[in-house]
Structures are given as C-alpha cells and as structure tokens.
Image 1 (spheres, rainbow, N blue to C red):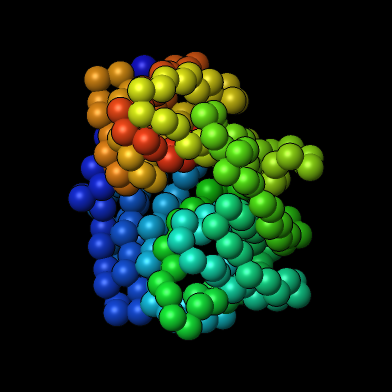
Image 2 (spheres, rainbow, N blue to C red):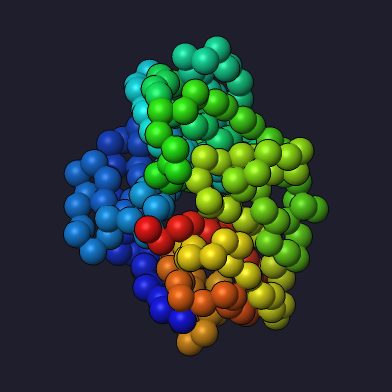
Length: 236
C-alpha cells in the first residue's frame, strides 16, 4: 500500500472577504507542483461563502463536478434550465461535458455556507451536459460508507462520467471499518470532514487527507466521532 498525506494546515488558502477558501490541490493563485491532483481527482475546494454572495455565471466543460454542502444552503442555476437550492444531506453532481454555464450563491442572506466542491476529469469528453441532485440522510451514512456517486445509473447513487466512486460515512469513536477499492486500478483519497481517524500508522484530524493506492482495501479506526469522505478514482 502506498500513501501520501496532505495536512489540513498545508492546503492553499485565499480569503476574498466574501469567499474564504482552502484548496487541497493547485487552484487559482495556489500552485504546488506536488499537489496538482490525485489520480484523476483534480480539485477539492473547501469554501466558506458569505451571506448572499457567491460565484456568478461562469463556464465549464469536460469536467465532472460534485458539490457537497456541509453547512448552509446553496442556490444553483445553469444553462440547462436547472434552478434549485441544495441543502446539507443533499449532493449535487454535474457533468459539464461539451459546455455549460452556471452560478452558485449562498441562499441565505444572514448565514455563511460551507461547501466542498470537487472536480474529477471525465472518462468521455464532450458528452451532453447533465445535472443531478439527491438527498442522502443521516441514517444512510451512519456507521458505514454510503456510496453516493458511481459510474452506474440507478436510484441509489448519482451517475458520474468516470470510473469513480464517492462514499461518505459518519462513525462513532472506537469504531473500525474496512473500505474496499471499488474499481481495479483506482486509488482512494480519504478526506476527514470532521473528527479523527487512523489509517495504518497515519492519524488524520479534521480536514486532513490521505491518498492511498496499490491496495485492494484498507482499515479505518475512528478515535473521535468522525465524518469521512472517500473519493475512489482511477490513478491514470
């Protein structure tokens, strides 16, 4: 098993006032040649957006974009005609494909929103853009890794144009669980949203991450109540 540890405090950081963002990988003004990507995972941004503020209409193409609100609600509009609000326990997945424009704003005029925005390189280029939004309850995630994004079309997960899987779980202190890599040749980027866990000899605190590859599975030991996101992606 090979690993790379990304400490939360060593992420890129920019504060524009309306946007306070941490970047796990090189993004915008943050550039680190050692942190360009993990396999086909290109972006993992941890954004705090001020009340009523957000990202105005802008274009994307040929990127798979997954948005996970952690606190607060996000208002979404796009050129496909989708208009809606995404709340905690909801996940948004969008294939930019041949090209799409969209905007994302903090739906609240009084409270901040904290969200994760994640980009994965697509398997097929220039597909027809598509959008999906689903609810995954606290019960879905309790004590196990619940797959929320997968390269299959079903009622249980959101589809992604890549051999990638996203799973999220909430675990009690003292618990232990295995994670099995879901596609041959994939690696797993384990991101601790909250709490503390140990994988092998590496302890991970809040917002720390561990990239893992060249293994079929690994064990997670939870030392403090934790919420953990696993992004299971092709390594090339």
